[in-house]
Length: 608
Image (tube, rainbow, N blue to C red; front, side):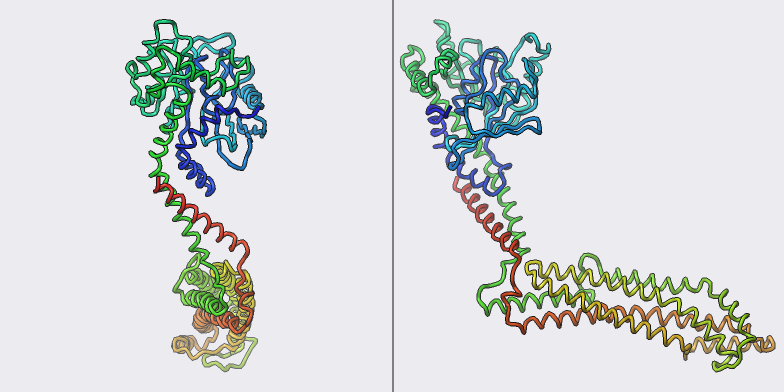
C-alpha cells in the first residue's frame, strides 16, 4: 500500500517550514556527523485506546499496528529520512542482531509485530528493548518519532501485576530527554486532570516548553461537555506553553471500511466547520490535523534553533581537525615543470637538513638517538670492565706456566716478553665479538631512525621513499663493513702489545723496585705490569670502538645519504620522482571536499 496524500500533505507543510534546516541536515549527513544533528525526537504518549496510533499515522504517513488493548509492547523509534533519490525503503533492527530490509509499506505492520514477538514474546507482555524502524523516501520529511506503550492501570490476564509501573518507567526513560518533544494524546471524553500521560509530561517538563497536548475523538463528547473541552483547548485548565490542538482522525470503523486518510482529513474539516461549539477553533488555529502540522513545525524549528550554536561549534571543531590533516599531507607538487623542479629541490633539501640534524643530535625522531647510543656504549664499557673479573687468575696461571719455559725480553722490566705478549693477546682477543655486537646494535637503531625520517619526509611520494630507503640500507651496509675492517685492524694492532703511556712506565719502575727487593723474582712483577697495560688497552678500546661507530655509521652515513639524494636533482624525470601515492591524492581530495562542505554547513547555520 503506497503512502496516501493526507500524510503527504502534512509532510509537505512540515517541510515548507523546516526545509532550510533539513537542507542543513542533509549536508551534515553528507559529511558524516549525523550523530550531532539537533533534530528533535517526538514521543507520543497516552492511555491505551486514546488515539495514539491515529496521531502517529497522521504525522508519519506510516501505518503501524493498532487495535484494542495493549498493541505497542516495545518502544518503537520511527526514523523518517528524506532522500529525493529513493522511492521507499525500510530497515527494521532490534535485539542487537536482527536486521531486515524491505521496500513495501504494507510490510510495516507484520515486521513490527514480528519484532515485538521476538523481544517481548507472544501475548500481552512488554519489553524495554528498542525497535528501530528507519524509512527512507522522497515522500517523507526528516523526523524521528517514538511510539510508546499505552498507559494502563490494571493488569489483564497474562500481564505482571506491576505492568502499569513498568510502562510508566519505560515512558519516563524516553520523555526525560531534553530534546524530545512530548505529544500527549488525550481523548476529549475523559477528565484531563486525571490523565496519567499529562502528569508524567509535567514531571519531566514542568514549564511545558516541549509538551503539546492533542485532544482526540471530539465526536464522542457527551452533549453539554463541549464548554469544558473549550476551556481545556484555550489553556485555562492545565496551562501548557505549547498549548492544545483538537483533531479528529480515522476511527477503527472508518479503517475497517477502508476510508482513505485523505477522505478522513476532508471529513475532519467538515466536522469542525459544522460544529456548533468547535467551529471557532478553526479561526483560532487550534483544530484539525493541518493545525497540528503547523504547531509541530514551529516546535521543531524552535528546538532546532536552540541547538544551532552547539552544532556550529561542533562543525568548527571538525573543520579544525580536517585542516590539521590537510596540513600533514601538504598541497601536493605544482603542475608547472619549473615550479615542480623547485618543489623537488625543497623536498630533498628538507629531508637532508633533517637527517643532518639527526646525525648531530639537534632533533629527536621517535626516541633520542644519542641517548640510545650512549646506553649501548655504556654497556660496551661494562663489558670491558667485566672482562677483568678473571684477569688476576688468568695472569697468575700463565705466569706460573710460562715463566720458566720462555726466555728473551724486549719490553724493559720483563725477563720473558712472550709471556707478557701471550697473556695480553689472549685477553684482548675475547673482546672482538662484543665490539662487533655493539656495532650491529648501533647500526640497527641508526638505520631504523633514518628509515623513519625517510617515511615521514616522503610519505606522499612512494618513489622518493623507496629510493631513500634503498640508499640508507646500502650506505649503512657499506659503512658497517668499513667499521668492521677498522675494528679488526684495531684488534690486530692491539696484538702488537705496545704503549708509551706514562702511567705504565711509572708502574713498571715501581714493580722493578719491588722485584729488586725480592732478589729479581720476575714473576712477582708480571701481574702489576699486565694489569697496568690492560687498563691502557681497555681505555683505547672504550674510546676507539664508539668513535669508529659514531663517525662512520652516523655522521658519514648521513653525509653520503644526503649526497645520493641530491644526485636525483640531475635527473630529468621529475614527474616520476614526485609521483604521489594514489591513495594520498584521493585522501587529500576527500578532505578538501569535506572542508568545503563543513564551511558551507557553517555558513548555512549562520544564515539561519
